[in-house]
Image (cartoon, rainbow, N blue to C red):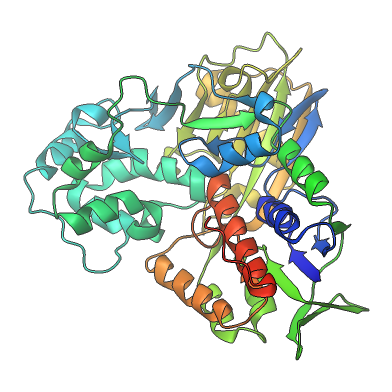
Length: 457
């Protein structure tokens, strides 16, 4: 049996690993990647002699998929969690501690966000509890809902900076149901003010489990281990240009040549998936065409060990604060294992629909980020080393009606035996969500081709 996995990010690498588990050594697995390296948004480089993540730098530890995969692949001894350094937010021209007591910025009480807001903003939040209950009819714009209930200030100063770190997009362009499903589900069960719903969703434990985790040595080690165990034929620098249905199986166009496979699993960003599905699953292709994407860049700085980097894990920055960067991570403060002879800082640039500083070349982008860092923290030290990584069009935006889009994609793909899709464009942009879609897609392939029952993700 020959199976092609197209896309070598965390979704593709996980899918290849799951396929090898279920199909055994006799199966021929081929992993196609258009870049010159595997990993997708998981990219670990060496900066100033230290492994350093310049893509995703952590995964959500309150979902089980990533933690389970780390343990399963023998990397549990590398698992680590953030230090106690607190994150901050630039709000209204000043930096304050990131408030607790919110669900992605939606407050459970006015006291939770008092430090972030002006007096007028606090009044708007306090008044929300007395408004009529929120009754959902389908999906709604998250930004529109929050602005109607709380006013603009909460969105601009807190919610948008938080969402910008996840989606590189603001609340106004994101749908409630895909972005905050727990909040939407609670409102479906019982209409209520948003503050009451947020309060009900907050952790009840006084010592909740760590929110995030990562791997010593970088998240790229997870990709390396998955590929080592999956043992696929890896084809780097190979762009799959077309996908065609055969009487039995599929044909992949690879430019000057073509190869046939019994099954194909696509684990690529929405624009690439839309292009490849145009012939074999046109309805899925059309639906994916509705998923917009954002671009961003990560500017990594290795600073002298005596640089006065704040004792905080980082700072989020709202779009209206006047900076080129949307966030800084003070990695050597956030992670105890990062930094040996240097202090590591990364600045994130780029918001959906606002290319701004992304138009600058790498040298200018470093200059802009360093200027922002100096204004925010006073740190002006000359870096020991720098690195710019650009992520063009790789961050999907979960707009209003996104869950309906995904349902159309999956329904159309399900009509094509031997075909499956996975990745961040579907059920979540984080690493655990991508692992879940990859596991489900691999299960779909193996259940159809071997007759085995599907394994739940």
